[in-house]
Image: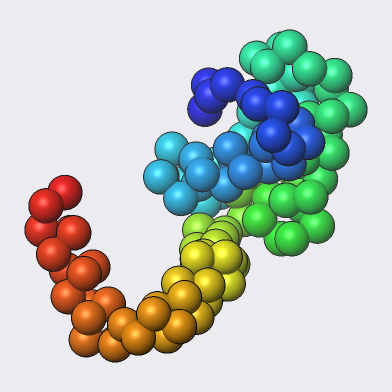
Length: 123
């Protein structure tokens, strides 16, 4: 999980996203304990309250749940829920704008598919 925090967005949002990414990459599995807010605070040299704010967002979304006296755990179905939300955000953030720009440039659906498949073949 050790990634560098940036100034681009709030630290608690970055903590939330790093935990989500670890779930997506199967670093954190369903029903597995996640680092405590104190562990996160020490790891990233941040205030425990900031780490807790990121973790609590995930609890509110049903991605994590608390076992009293033991810690926070990844909820069943968390990975699928994160994938679904991130796919929707990906579409809204990247694909919609691309489709609008493609239409204004006269790029057809077939041209777009060709561009994508050609690029994937080169990667």
